[in-house]
Image 1: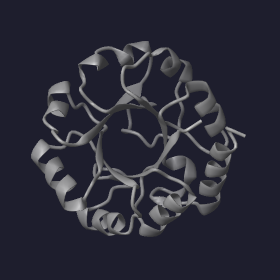
Image 2: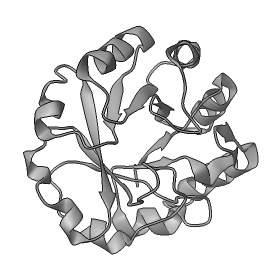
Image 3: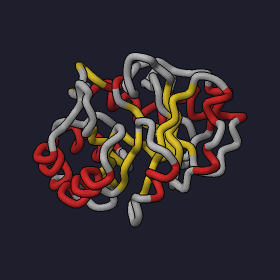
Length: 206
């Protein structure tokens, strides 16, 4: 199964380097308020060291369009992930950018109106009143199976080495997004957990 892998919440070049060496297709850089937030300067340092064909993805929450576009240009981002209350109209303003719209999944109603978004993929994350992503909790994956979304699905929310196989086999997503499940602490990746995660994914097709 050819499932793309994004390691999110990267704050250090060495963690990005390890993720890429293990087989990640993308790394996520969070520009919104978060324990994993990076500045433009930090992001530039990380992106500068990425090997070819690895996509740096900027994660934003209700960022003014002009500010987002400036960050994309200054940091050399290859895609953006909208993790707030961004509307279809907002997404349409991001011309020339690969856009991922994050959806906080609580129940089947969470998928209503998504056909209005002209985006490249939907990222399905766990609903939380307290925070936007990085909760460490999963949601009912059967909701994703039956959603029948018209765009590629990236699965997120509480993924870790212990459940990644089941998650991928159940949902069969275009990609997976992992952050807290491979951390030693917020913003700092754990090498052993990272290696275990990629080993589990590699073992799915065997």
